[in-house]
Image (cartoon, rainbow, N blue to C red; front, side):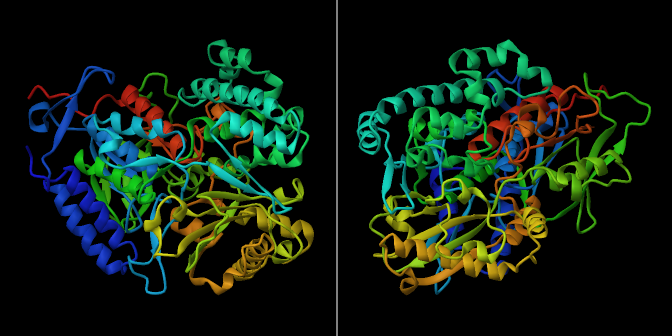
Length: 617
């Protein structure tokens, strides 16, 4: 057997992940040294490729020297989508390099340490994703490269899934046990338990058939919406009107209590909508939590990031951190037709140019930054004129909320908080209007916000007796804030003013709910603002959940738009592909990973496996 400390072994992966956590809050210079050492180790790995006649066949490893030169793939951005795509492409035989502008990979999927001493013995926070939904989609990413998720991380189901805290300071839990859930709901509203079971069955059908119709399969035509092979099973299982009308109307059919309507629709926050404008099909979000469950990677979400990076390391992917891409280089096809069957491309990708001036050629470029930012910031509009129109198209599109994120290091634990908590305002409709000025937080207003309290499940996230409280407070995204302030005739406030007002609103809500004055227990605070989200992670307008998911920005209408109508469709460039939250199918780690699979299949179909054909000479 291999040495337990050999590169790629399980113990070595755990050692590297542990080291990553230790250095999470280290100075940048120290992290750069560690990154350089890691890069040296990766470059020393033997280069291997996967040769197969079809993607479905079993793979065999063979030396690249025996099979010819490999196609070069550049992945711009090492977020979840970038890491997932890189390991798949490398496994298929491509020579892959990830170029990540930050000092580590993972994008928003990360754990960070904060505290008065700013060391790894302090408080650990999942500062990006904190809910693991649809765990089988994570597993699929590992099996695609011949590995098992369980060899890289331990996950456990969080039970109860959530606690909803209402404006009148009562609460309800999202329970997996259907009978217990029925009884809990009947105590609020007679007969609601039975209607809940009916609603859940239909919501689950929306999930199963909706995923099969529009998420697992790419959307390439407006006709997909009337393709019976796609929509037929979904339409037979669920009333089409329930899928298309606002979710609030659907909730009214099942529940009279505003609390119960809110309990099963607050999830719209995650897709940039509200129950009043989200189509009813988004009941699938609640169905996901209640049937597949809410899961937790033990040790925090950095386990996900570290495991996805480990897959890349083991496949021989070169990862260059602290490396900014200035532009994705394309050139016109001219009068020559595309070499790819069915392509309508007018350009072909040639590689990327770094901020340092270095040019790296590539056969395939996969862009992981927020897609509107790619068109706006990374494409030379003189060489690729259609890019200018595409960038303008998404400038004022519908975007999700931004958030002010508060990470509080507490020296106490809050008894009534579960692992996942959502605080809902008593003003069920008005509270969905995103705050844009400081006065929007004035008392006695209540606001919707999410609270992560991982010490409920994992005591290692904080010192003994303490807790790591992360609060996501939705606010207007940067573009939306400017537009709303102009409409209201108000100056745009500073982020410092918004942070101060938002903090007080949250602390006031905790105090009103009987949790005491948390100001006395906050030993350290770290805050992330909309501008910081935008600058650090290339998120358009600081809209943390990407483009909104209204009907006009779903499936074939989500970029790159592929309706089959030339006037509506996005420009095409041979060799340029996209992954991430603002492209198809949508945001959230499992959907991004599902989008990776769809994009990978398209790359293999268009460009073939990674090994180039041997030349006769």
